[in-house]
Amino acid sequence: MRVFSYLVALAASATAALAATVQYDFSVEWVKANPDGDYERSFIGVNGQWPPPPIECNIYDRVIINVTNNLGNEPTAVHFHGLFMNGTNAMDGPVYVTQCPVPVGSSIIYNFTVEQPGTYWYHSHFAAQYPDGFRAPFIVHDPNEPFAGQYDLDTYLTVADYYHNSIPWLMANKFLTLTNPKGSEPIPDAALFNDSQNIKFNVEPNKTYKIRLINMGALVSQYIWFEEHDFKIVEVDGIYVEPTDASMIYITVAQRYTILLTTKNSTDKNYPMIASFDTDMLDHIPPGLVWNVTGWLTYNDNAEFPQPALIDQYDFYDDFDLVPVEKEAPYEPDYQVTADVQMVNLGDGVNYAFFNDITYVAPNVPTLYTVMSSGNLSTDATIYGSNTHTYVLGYQEVVEIVVNNFDTGKHPFHLHGHTFQVIERSDAAPSDDDNLVYDPTNPGTINEYPMRRDTVYVRPGGYMVLRFKTDNPGVWFFHCHIEWHLAQGLALVLVEAPLEIQAQQTIPDDHYAACKAGGYSYQGNAAGNTVNLFDLTGEKLQPNPLPTGFTARGIVALVFSCISAFAGMGFIAWYGLSDIKTSTPEVVDIIGMGEPLDDGDDAK
Image (cartoon, rainbow, N blue to C red; front, side, top):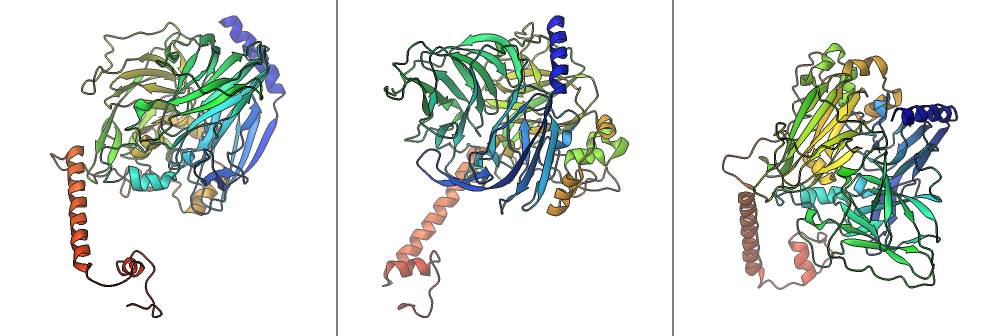
């Protein structure tokens, strides 16, 4: 391992000397598109195009992206998923964690050096905005990758779930509402390959293709396979792994896999490639839902494009068993964060997500800005607010995060600013009424060289144990990457080495200018208080608990009783008006659903 690391260091020095500056100008705006052919809607695009363009660079390049918000009706922000942002925490992008929202008409510059090779993606990190289209691959090329020279073409293939309705509309009308007390996530309308369907992935015989697979969806994990073609997994989430044979992968939202796929000798057939929803993650399956998408490895445009064969089961490779090329034994932890996952209703009747009985509520001041304006008090977690669920971490330590999942669903968790070792991941609990809780005195399977990545899922009712080194001072979000669950508050904040942040980093003037343009607070504690940082008056808090004895089932009964009562009253009103002689359009106007009548109408 030392020889490999030494050679990598020499190659890195040579590559860094050749680094370039890569610049992009992004006008973020609404664009009409119809990716599944069934429904045209507005998407968030860039420079008049949707999907947005991929970002590509070489390792050690400086990337500068000038983002102007021309949406007209929403703020925005950009996160570069998986990039560590060493020394430039202000460029990480999550709103109220490391920056203010970028208001309509304002611009912001993201300026950072990329020091990691591999497959990443960028996406909006304002509210739940990215499923409305603001996301695309971010590819970092590395001439010194371990499998250099073993493939003929480098390309990518994205998968995503897709909604016909906008995310703000779904949030307000279908999800975070009193009428959805169980927190059932909206069901996607379709699955997409490269933001389309029925795509032809052109290949030549006897070639090896490096394919970067990225799940850019909002909710569901997907199974991906290529009929009659096996492949080798060589990278996950920017971490090179020992080449591993597989025939199918399971990819959660936000995960990335890079594979090497070698084509066949003959061009007489085309072969389906399939991405299929993990339907266990859907609350129900609506009639007519097509939960998979098919494309084709296209050897011959004149040959048949067959439908995929039925399979008996999903036989995917478990990423827990992948071995990094740069092998590291399990870290010994200095500090532990235990995060117990629950989904519970609060006093407003809405279903929220919790770590340790706290649902994340964004502060008035971005947490990084609180760090930068609080001096020595930055080491006291109190100033970051009651509902940001903030932990202050020391420098150059090993932190262990234990996630106990008391929910019956799967959750893919992402850590900003780091990759982590996946020390343990339990099976799912045997039933919805059971839970498997981490017991350090009775550990499960721990690999000699644990797999590392930045996004990993915990099974229903199970647990997982993650470890990482605090070698990257910054404010880092740890959250479920199911966008609906982040909106429910399934997140916590890690303030890593705050005094080192203050000593080593700055926030650019244009980032402060975005705050001022939008009227957002940018200094002081979580409440925006600058005189007494322990005075949290005015901070945002989670709703009060439900009254004792209320349950989700009780809320459902109450809601539908109210609906039935209003329906009954409506019927009585209709019956009472049934003898009034008037035309149908005028009845609609009388009960307030159409335009008001004016003096020119025949009937009053």
